[in-house]
Length: 219
Image 1: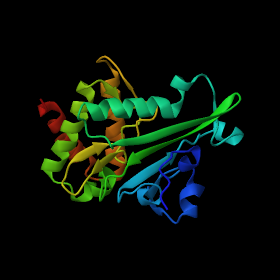
Image 2 (image 1 turned 180 degrees about the vertical axis):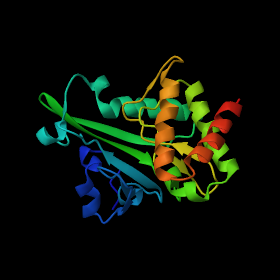
Image 3 (image 1 turned 90 degrees about the horizontal axis):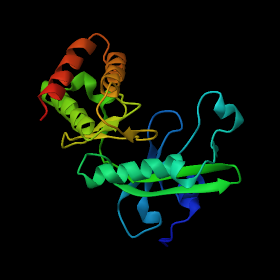
Image 4 (image 1 turned 135 degrees about the vertical axis):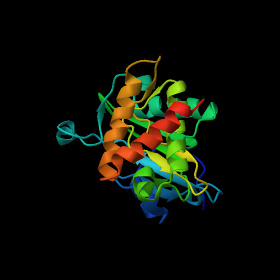
């Protein structure tokens, strides 16, 4: 039976695993889970659950808990609000579903649910077969986000997705923010350049030039 009342349990992998609702996962550290929404709501939609995990030295202390400095400063609250803002502006980000923060005294845990982009593949995976038109669309998409003021602090070939209709999407807005134009735009592009060179060895320069051409020509 579907459970339409959102609870913090929705933001834990165990909840969905117990209902046999996990349909897959995305690659990467602290992999996001793909889940079937029909386990809790009357829908055939697929969602993505990301539990916020710490990396580096901080993870040795706690992998899932962050220092509490107020609700509006939590990772999930800030990302949910940014995701919603960009979605309402018509930019290609996944539709937000819900976010959750649960406090434990001086610390908190958090999770985020968004709609899954069905059939999407990361730019990293499609680079070997990407044609000039697709690469130009990637550049155009990045330019549109920059024009909206989005500083994506982890702009890489895994956070750009391509759906079967060849639309380009941007995901993972954790720690990102809206800013006035500045040097951060070039820093974003350089980060993407390093990522493209990593996933397209031997063709990184040509790929990057096609992408940047799309970026420059976007209006």
